[in-house]
Length: 84
Image (cartoon, rainbow, N blue to C red; front, side, top):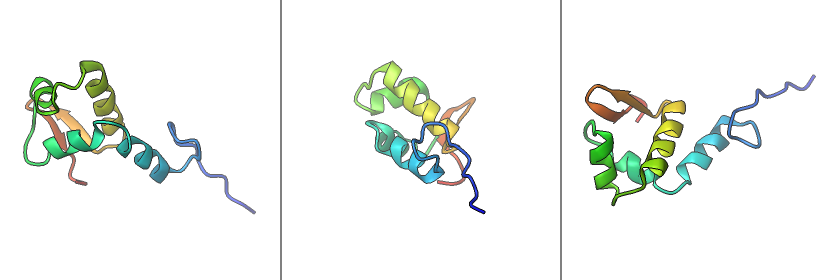
């Protein structure tokens, strides 16, 4: 009997790896991860480091990265999770 794969929000195929690839392929995502590589960064500082990306785009990418548990938001700002 074939097992049904659980649907993953944001992925047309329902596969988590495809969701990850979709998010990583979006504009600004890799730059955001790069800027978070060494330390926590506030939203404003991250925006400045990313060549003044629009607040809407930055907020959207950070939300997607938080949903994938790649980024967390703490009192000191945004930072990578232990996975990275």
